[in-house]
Length: 382
Image 1 (cartoon, helix red, strand yellow):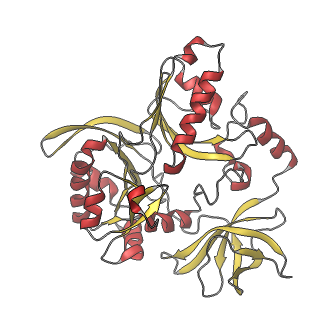
Image 2 (cartoon, one colour):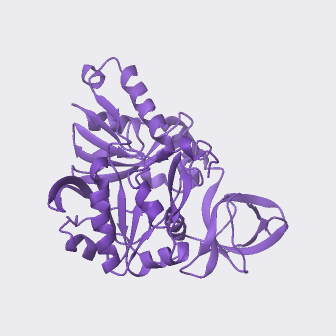
Image 3 (cartoon, rainbow, N blue to C red):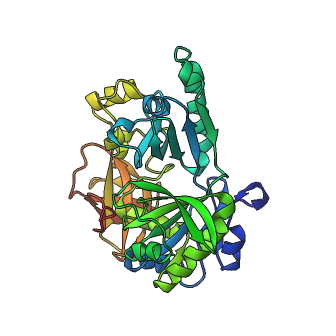
């Protein structure tokens, strides 16, 4: 956490988090809850896996592309193919550099051919919006492209995640919509505290569990959160901080920008080549990425399961049996579900599933086995 928290941005629920004993930490320039009193990360993690957890992720960015041809324009910029989905669906996609590495990973909500709503990572929102604006202004041949409205809406909306086996019951109890299909969303008006509040609900999440992400207006966030928090408590769940969010996503092997994804790592190396529309004629970084695919990526992402007592951390050297460095961990944690250390790593292509390796943890070797994530078996698509 920064020593001068006055320079950090606060979300719409900062006072609620502090009042409820949250330990606050810096995430992408925002002061957000890491964990709460009452059990901490392990208890919050377990609540999500066994009942339900509620996350405030309002630090995530929000942006919008509106106007005739918005979908087509976004499709020429971002990696995935927006024409694979229909309005009312969301899509995981990437903004790439010309070198084919990752500026950011984000979710695109397709409302229609003229309306694409984006949720990038907190620290990268301005960069993504700036790149979109630059691409729009550079396309002088298409008058409709020049007229596209591209807006940074970072502080116009909040984002909450309700995740876990009891998440549907929480939504039903509050009369909130429950989109039937994974990665589908609904724009609706919820009646909360007697007030009609517009919001968006999407069947998405970052935990591997059945869940929903709710996007209310920034001003309505406290009322929506209070209603959700009360119902989550009645369902045997907890408010959860970003510490549990990280352990949950690591158990699933989900990539995190700044760890598995960065401007030094390509989608092929990170194992998210499935989020690339390879048949599209163009998108940012396409030529470099196609060339890397043809030549073979110089690294690949794998899971590492500790075979000894110890907790892997990011940045540890991965060693083969001869002690040679064959990679580096990108994420590492203690898995509360498994009661074991787990890690994600970028390693040489020669590393194979089942290989016995070791991590250099401050001069101590920790034995690990190469596995294919996820480390735990749950299914968010159920």
